[in-house]
Image 1: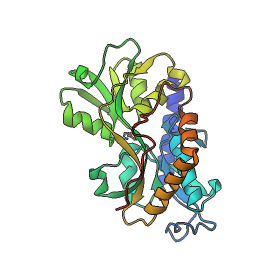
Image 2 (image 1 turned 60 degrees about the vertical axis):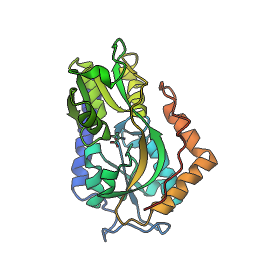
Image 3 (image 1 turned 90 degrees about the vertical axis):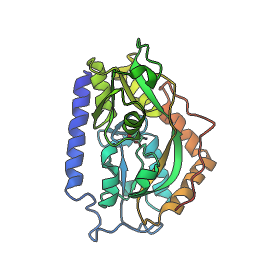
Image 4 (image 1 turned 90 degrees about the horizontal axis):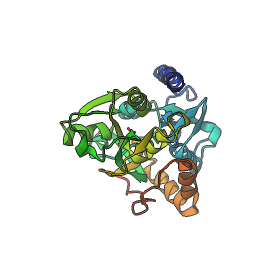
Length: 282
Ligand code: GLU
């Protein structure tokens, strides 16, 4: 049952990639994105994850999750209606390329702000701060990355999660997949001892019906992941996006969105770090 569900998700992901490879936004004959606050009849292309329940999730062409809710709020503030938003799948490894190649206008995809990424893309935000953690089978005795020496750990290509393991835990057997759902499937098959990424992503996967009762998040975070809004370098949208995020927090819509999207998951966000204050635009 679980395999069938993930196989369908994987096929949908391939189809989405194929479509975006064919040129992405067909709505704009000039190929240039509309300016902030001048949306008119144009659409805005927003990169999200399609396979992270509670954050960015494709339920047969309707999209749900906290990233999706923040993206909609921000796009509305920039002058776009929900109907003018075109959601595009942005897997971890493709995000910088998609921004650099003008395949998306902005990305809300559990996308951590890092100095390395700032060499090629720009960020607004942060709008959330998560922490790297581990997902393990319910009966596992793993309590943190120190317990993973010689064990098989799965993470995703192009993520800060995989990079941190390579940099700081070289004794761990790191297996990379294109998405975290594939990692959980591999753990279900017994080939993998643990999955690592941000706690909120792991909690959403653990809470899926197909995974219920099988896995638990260890609850011992070992990084700070500031979720930013990915933008092409030179974008003039950063200030407006930061203002929209601040408004969403001040109005209470941020709190409602995080509560609604983590309902049913065994997760509570770090209240010392959240909601964050957006950083000044570069
Ligand atoms: N937030 C981390 C990152 O940006 C991990 C989650 C992800 O792969 O999206 O790489």
